[in-house]
Structures are given as C-alpha cells and as structure tokens.
Image 1 (cartoon, one colour):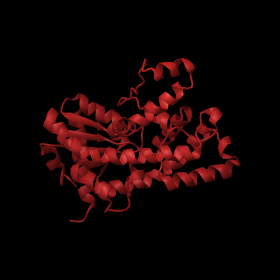
Image 2 (cartoon, helix red, strand yellow):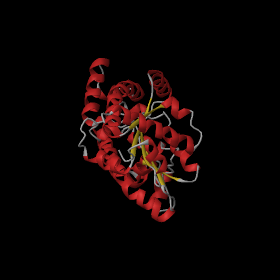
Image 3 (cartoon, helix red, strand yellow):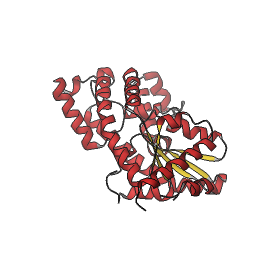
Image 4 (cartoon, helix red, strand yellow):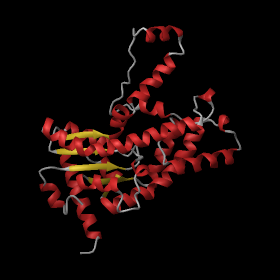
Length: 292
C-alpha cells in the first residue's frame, strides 16, 4: 500500500485516496465533505466521464431529440440556440439519460444493440477517467496547491478492471498513486439501495459479458421479445443481480490493493480529521491481517 502504517498515513504531507464501493453508500458525500474542508482536491470519475469523454455524445443526443421538433430544428440549423449539458458532481442525470435502458421504445427504451454501444462508450470513458487521476494529482498540486487528493469513483469501477488479478495494470496504476478505500455496506444497506432503486430506476454500466447474460436470462424468464421489455423492470431486475455480482469484486479489490471501512463508520464522519483518523485505523487493521 501507499502508506505502510496508520502513523505514516497521518504524518504524510500528501494524502491521496481512491474511494470505491456501491453507489449510495457515501463516496460522493464523503469526497464533498473533504473538499469543503479546504485542503482536499475532489476528482469525480463520473463527472470526468460525462464531460471529457462522453460530453459530445450526451449533447448530440439532446440535439437529436430537439431536431424532432420543427420549431427547435430551425433554430438549431441557424445556430440561434445553444444546447449544452449541465452536468455537475451532484447531478449526473445527463450522463444517465444518455446511457439509457434497453427495451420497449414506447416506454423510453433503447434497442439492445444501441444500448450496448453506449455501454462500450462508457467503458472506454471510465477507463480513461481513471487513468486521468495521475494527471489530476499533479494538476491539483501545480495549479491549485492542493496536497491532498480524493478520487471519487463510480460504482462500476469493479467492472472495468479485473479485481481478482493482482497484476491488473489499471488497478496497479491507481494503487501506486492512491490508497484504495472500500466503503463496505451490510445486507441492510443493500436492501435499502435496492428499495431506492425500485422507486427510481437509473441507468447503470455493467461488464459486457455479464450484461449479455442478464439480458438473455431476463428475456427467457419473462418470456418476452426485446422490443416488449419494460425498461424500468429490466433495470431493477438487473440491479438486484448486479449487487450480488459486485460484492465479491469489491472485496477482492480491497484485499489486493487497499483497505476497508464500514458504511456505518463513514456515516458518522463529520470532518476531514475524523476521516483521516478512520483511515489510520483501517490501515493498521489491514496490516494486522497480513503475516509479518
């Protein structure tokens, strides 16, 4: 690990962490709290994907929709209006809406082939955004004079690396520059996240082979054709299975490269100093597990 003891972490002049785990357990909340403290640079992987890597795709999708309206189409053709994505750290709706959900077009669904094409765009963007953290660590220091850096990853990081391979090149790059920190939830947390998702199903990114299996299994179980799929029903059905799929992947990431903190521990944190002390404990806990 980047820091070989809790004391080394606390005394480090530059603290760099990468937060990962299921969406909804506090990664962005924690990173935002650190940013507000004034000493930490907050790098959001999802924001970087939605601006640097998929920004044009998102805006072009808006324009395609606008071109269906004759009034807006004329204004677009004459450059009389400007359409942009107002994506923020706290509002990733433009990215989610572009990714979409497969199924019945009358219910807002995408053809599965188009859905997979957008998934691949996201995969490429996520890998690029994760690699960019090395540049942003340097940029945060050279331009803004931030010593401390927090990388706020998306829940799908475990889908774009091989968490079971200690030689995975992308994860080794990240671990060479950050302390990876898994925010681990309990079964109760998982049930609450599923409950929330049922209320407002959102687009997700999945590893391609896993997603194809999900899609075929759903079609067979529900006995429906692709164009008959209810997009929200599939999204919820897939999300429940994704939670079980991702848990061992996160666990392997923490085992091979980082440390684990509990979601309940994170929920009690109210200051950067408390966060730093929690990670010192987590580093020493991890160190105690390994043979001398």
